[in-house]
Image (cartoon, rainbow, N blue to C red; front, side, top):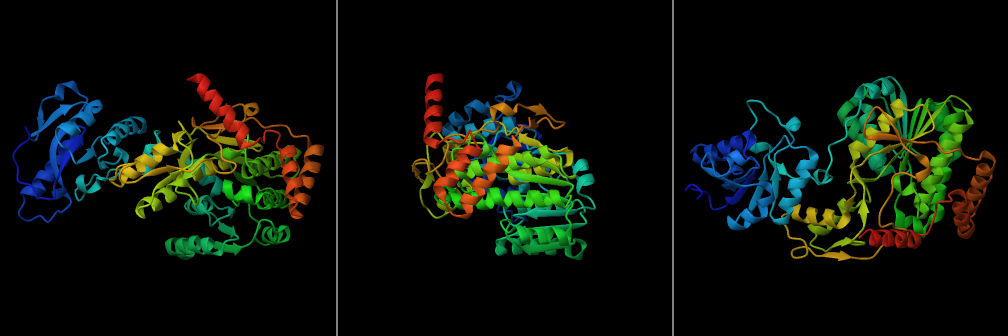
Length: 508
């Protein structure tokens, strides 16, 4: 039986997962704070430690500071019910991400609030810090089931240091994080180019507040569609490295306005890339997406065209510019992604909307995505498509369920989940590599290089011109036909999803 202690009425019956040093420290802090007549620690008063879970057989049945170790991690649900647990604390900071996700998945079955001790590398271990004070709510990125990706900062520092760096779409989710990370490596100058003034202003003010006059920052409002304006920027500022993040990326919106995807993504990329080549920029780095692989929508097909443009220019070997493409999946928390939408729906008391119960996606964090871009730029020699091993895909409905639980609510009971049907152009699952590209390892075991595809320069140039002309005339029928000619792997979402469903059924 649990020890008889006096607890504040607000203290919740708590299960601690992990019976090691971290659990002992937590218990000490909780009990000492509760016994002390001088403390006003409202946070520690929220916990009534009732039982401990640990996978070490030698600890089973024993007590740690009067709290019994009752079972193993696979028995969390059983003992949560038996001991009438109201909340959980995961107190094993040394777990790998895979191990942590496995335990989090079990914890989610209890439908109870879960708090977590940070990874051991993130703990603050000094005389002024308490472990309990570092216990926090679980973060969405901890549901990805893989370790955070590490990058070679030395390569990036040598690459960026003292250089003039330009970021198109510099106010967007990826672009603004690119600007933040570039600023850390002592560039000679950063040029933010964006058509949306509010985003550009926000990142400008953020960097001015952080760096003041130490950072040479230029913020310009311009459209990548405007060849002459972009040429003016190249002539005046002479960037040495260009990160091209400007793009329309929202699949359903671009299905309704495919001309805009072609103008902004294809023509915009062609403008910036050819001008980079003309002005002898050292490296041009294009931000691509897994939706460019066997695309089923205008946005994905337009981004595949962008990849082909980059490879086409690299294949020409004209000038000194090295061209590189970086491709990754969905970014947690980016503008237009599912997580901000889910959070808004939960906070407003509305149902969470998921398009399909079987839909899956690859996810990464914004800093990871940008670090990939930075390292790819540093190690690129020209023509590569860098692809990140993003681990296992995540079911969107599972992500929604876990996010609801992170708010201390019960999916389908406190917060309904409504399936609204696949949106225009939407795949059930995304792919990261086209079959013909193959894979080659790099020095980072999670970054691969897709084999460069040879492009018929004569046919490519004429088809690109046909696509551009149709888009500028807003001739949707001709433009979409030209897009299919440019990208032979561009198929309808119905065809792709029908094939995938059939494949999944046959495997079962």
